[in-house]
Length: 190
Image (cartoon, rainbow, N blue to C red):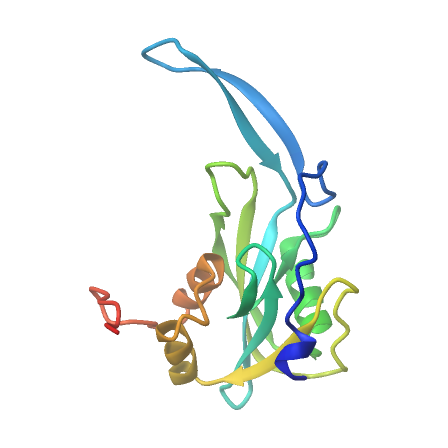
């Protein structure tokens, strides 16, 4: 799959209604010391998952896709939403299979983070899947165009340095498994 098959073309923009992924809630809040009242928006949404998947020969399964918010192709671990009535492990296994065709392996929960506590009410669960293998062809959702990459840790570090991999939730999941950068981090110059 070439970049033209992944890059979307923006035809226009306009404000829209609530979308199925989020329910908008406006909370009227009183400041604790000044007593000034503010309206604060909260986006209610389902929990999310990120999957750090490693093949039996040590390759890391990553995906590349167009992200609408930033308007560019990004490289990141498999990720998705937890469907209603579904546990985060089942969601992680489903997303890995749908987006990449990989499955099986040994699974371990790596904890969760608050996705964006300033406006979201959900958590993102990080999962590690070791020893995965191809069990079917990828079957992404109708709204997804995805390219699968098998990467080494050095490849991932290069993608971070090049700015191709900067999704904070993906980096959070990966950093629970791999040393991604020397500390303290010093950004490359250039």
